[in-house]
Image 1 (tube, rainbow, N blue to C red):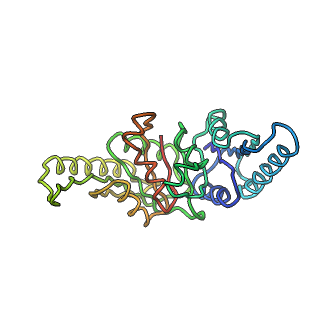
Image 2: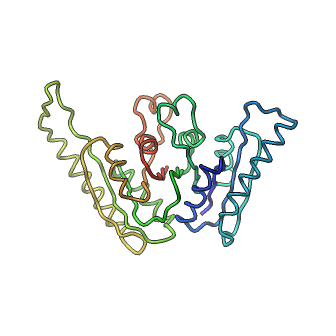
Image 3: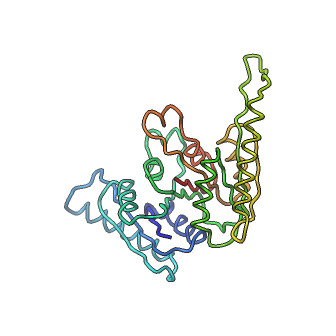
Length: 273
């Protein structure tokens, strides 16, 4: 697997470097650090200091990587951090981008932004957002919305198996009918049909994935998808979701369940595209 790791401060990046070593057998790692442009001069002492700091962060990360990895490359420049990571991923044809996060509240992030969030929104390749300390991965929650999601995630997990076998739960959350002004919920025949369809999707996915790498099971629940996935995810080491890749006005109007999960989850989330 070829991975680009976005290098920021030690607090957010070092756990991400350790986590990716727990997850996959790595063929190539590219450590990419873009020094922030604000208050920087194109030339001069400030630029030199920014580059020196970036190289120091990169070497701290490199020291954590196994000597068995065939190729480790480093990239450092005074550029917008998120753009630099995204460009690096495109240039090297990365299979995965890995980002640590300061885990800002969603409202604050809307105003002050974060590099990990911008990378997540604009990336065209799967992105792993690492939260908290690195941990061994033995239980994985794979959340699917429908057959398309299940097929995409199944293909990714099959093509990029984890370093060690894991227990995998395939979960689909069916939205519940909305209560009226009196708190009453009308019987919904379509709800039963959606639940049966969701059950079929997760059972088929679990059956397809069950084998030497995965001990897979299926689960269907009702409620708000992001809320339920994050709540169930507390019992797992990693949450895996699919992104529909909505852009522009459509993304603004419909929102993104995958982004909502990344913001709300208390553990690492892998977003597959």
